[in-house]
Length: 102
Image 1 (cartoon, rainbow, N blue to C red):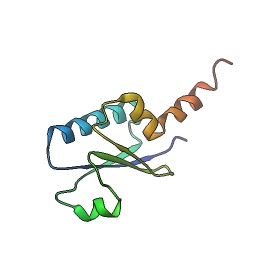
Image 2 (cartoon, rainbow, N blue to C red):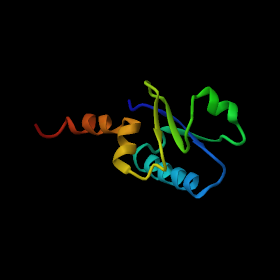
Image 3 (cartoon, rainbow, N blue to C red):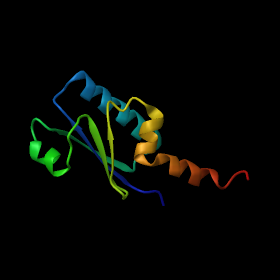
Image 4 (cartoon, rainbow, N blue to C red):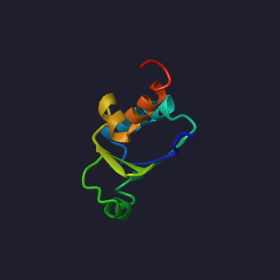
C-alpha cells in the first residue's frame, strides 16, 4: 500500500512567489500523489506560531510531515527534480520499477 503524504506549505501572504510555490506543489501532487495527500497552506503572517513551532525561518517552505522522516524544502518549488527528491518520491519510482527489467 502506498504511503499517505501530509504536507504543509508555509508562505507569506499572497505574493507571486507564494502562489508559484503552491501551484508548482499542487501540480506535482496531482500528478504523483493523487488521492493520497493532504496539503495545508499556512500563511506565517496569520499564524506566526505555527511557523515558529515548525522552525521555519524562510518561505516558501514545504514540510513533509508524513511519511517519516520529516523533510523540509525551501523555495518556490519550481525545480521539479529537487522537489521530487525533497518529498522522497524518487524512492517510489524505484519501487515501482522493480517488477520490470533487470
